[in-house]
Length: 187
Image 1: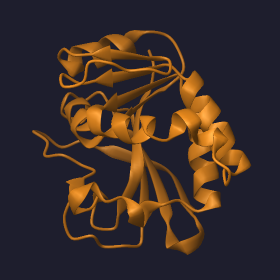
Image 2 (image 1 turned 90 degrees about the horizontal axis):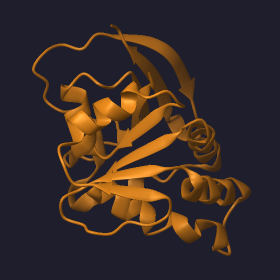
Image 3 (image 1 turned 90 degrees about the vertical axis):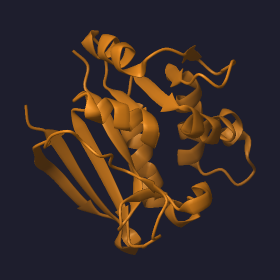
């Protein structure tokens, strides 16, 4: 069975994007970018909702060709293109870059993919992650908190029907006061 990980940058007040889908406050330092690269290199399948897919696919297919790309950004772009991806959306009709589109109910498909053998999977995007969270499918949460309050926006966590108990397995501090708290779901 594959592990399912949900992790993103979020504000101290719990949002992954400020109003208007503004994520400018969460631009990672080189140190934090390297952390995310190291995490992504261990992932065997990326799962995106539409909004995050549009954000990622607007930059990373050619991210390694940007004149100011760092070595980590070059490696991230290459890894992003090579890693298999599934986009869950009923509003787009085409995806590229080693990606397939799934238009049905996400929870049964994520459950099916999770039951396979293989490297860990990462779910990204608040709506898609919320469905996986409510279904009890997430095994690990990577909470990377930036020292900023945005007041409103897209929350990292969703409303749940029942309590989910977690075990803290790692903490780390990055420059600029950014912190990582990694939790595993207690089963």
